[in-house]
Amino acid sequence: MSVQVMTGERVAALLRAAGADLGHGYQCVTGAYIAQSHHPQVEVGLPLLITEVHADVAPQVGAVLANAYPAGHPFTVLWAGEDDTLHLRLATLAEWTNQPLAGPSCSLYAPPLPPFSSISALQEIVAHLRAPDGCPWDRAQTLSSLRHDLLSECAEVVEAIDAETHGADNRDQIAEELGDLIMGAVLMVQIATDEGRFQMADAMHSVVTKLRRRHPHVFADLAVDGVEGVLTNWDAIKAQEKAAKGLVPGHPLDGVPAALPALEKARQVQAKGAKAGLLDRAAIAQANPALAAIFAAGMDEGALGELLWQVVALAHASGLNAEDALRSHIIAVRAAHADTAPASESAESKGDNRIAGLPGAT
Image (cartoon, rainbow, N blue to C red):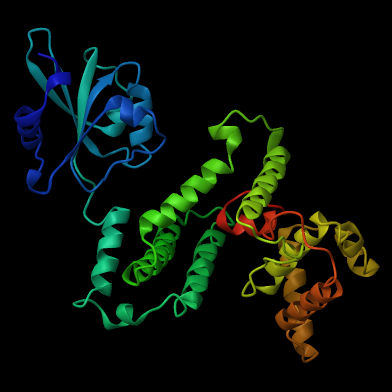
């Protein structure tokens, strides 16, 4: 007997022996299928059986599973002994990963993660909330009504991350806030689904194919020279995408979200302007010699924060709002370059992409 041929009723019997509830089904994939990825493309809310885990793929299988299952998650290891007897052993994922195989190959059984631990579980509850027997508030939402909530959730994620500035471990709060942010995105997709516009698969296909297309140095044979080479090629690909869609290149300073806080908006406009040759950041930095001298004497993040804090107080003392003042200046800068020729590349700058965790300027 070999575990490779454990199929049908025998597989079901083994799964039941391991405590699997087969009333809702299960998954059965090979070790080679898991090893070819960096994240297991399985449903963590269902029992999982991985067969044909050979010694040559076992380390990669363990590494891939660790991207979705906790190190302490219980697994059942199944293998055939020399006398053709099937053996079972319980081990956590970490224990199995750090131990050699008992034979030339084995199978692994992973029970589901705790309830409500998957993206599909989130999609289910959001769909329920939007259903006729769901929540009146959720049913009343539209893409437009959720715009400010989305910005608020992004800000709360940033605040949770900022709490780690001085070395604190704020992982629980970051995870919670990221969950809220993802929930907002799932709710927006569900609204579009209810309206017959698009589904989650459409959004996922769009972003995955885009990432593959814009990383030919990873998914094709293009050679790039470091980070700058990646960014240059990224912009060239975006320009090609726009041209293929028949889109007219926009103004070099276009594409900065209007709702951004003024400081981030200023950073992005400067990044766009510098990239297009419209703004000289070095000259801007020296425009006020007295202020430049403060930086020349030494400046770190804490000191800069204190300086900005003082500027806000000084603005208030003068009857001004620092946020509004900077936003108005950005509008004036944009107006001063209104007649500039359209950009030859995507209207979205590398600075914009930083918000989405994609390559971008600073």
